[in-house]
Image (cartoon, rainbow, N blue to C red):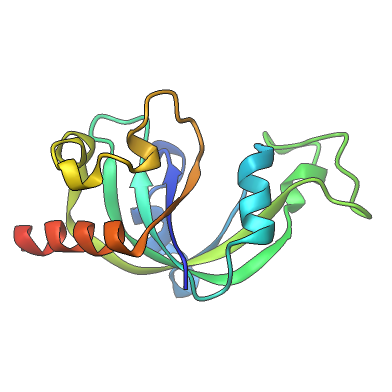
Amino acid sequence: MKYWIMKSEPDVFGIDDLAKRPRKTEHWDGIRNYQVRNMLRDDMQKGDEAFFYHSSCKEPGIAGIIRIVKAAYPDHTAFDPESKYHDPKSDPANPRWLMVDVQLVRKFARVIGLPELRSHPALADLLILRRGNRLSITPISKKHWDYILRLEAKSS
């Protein structure tokens, strides 16, 4: 099993939106970065887990845990001219963009905020903490995963 951090803006699609979906499951669409697309295609598998990270908001941080319940498949929004994620160069016969399905495992009692994450030297090499990192999905080590879970447990 691999671990990830998956970022979304809560005013677009947040953890509460996922909680309201049937079976608390939704596709994770709109990836338009080749590096992230390659991670979806080559590295992310059904059963992997991810922290759901709220970004570009008043309180950015980790809001809960999600599980990958369907491995990468073509992102249909790339073919829809009405979608904000439409890519006229993406061909259904040879799709350029992929998505996965995620399911809510649990929402945290509180968001583990970016300042708190930055305050822990043990997390200093997390990709999301690096200046200039704009990737919406990043891998995370089991060591960092467990450390963040301990932070969440301390707040309960």
